[in-house]
Image (cartoon, rainbow, N blue to C red; front, side):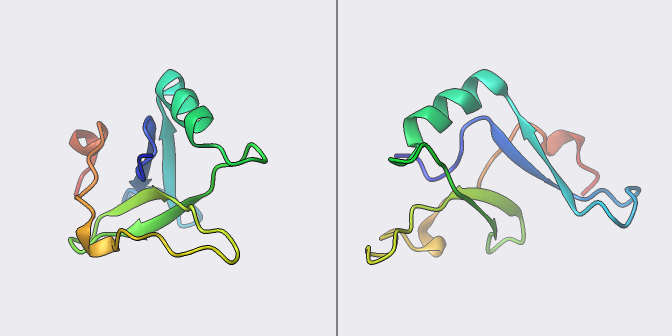
Length: 92
């Protein structure tokens, strides 16, 4: 399973956005629906965490924690820097 949601992207708040906007989420529908279907739990749910990389970039990652289960064996430090198609449009 892929920890990074395919077709779902988090974008930081733009400097020109109103104060009540903290960021945005974009979808490539076909890719996102496929990933969501492949990663849904037994209740048909997918949980995502909003995280900050060592480089300071905010990204989405699948939350696969279950009560009584073991933590995700892959530590955040070992995850690659996420890439998304919207980076070129960002002013930072």
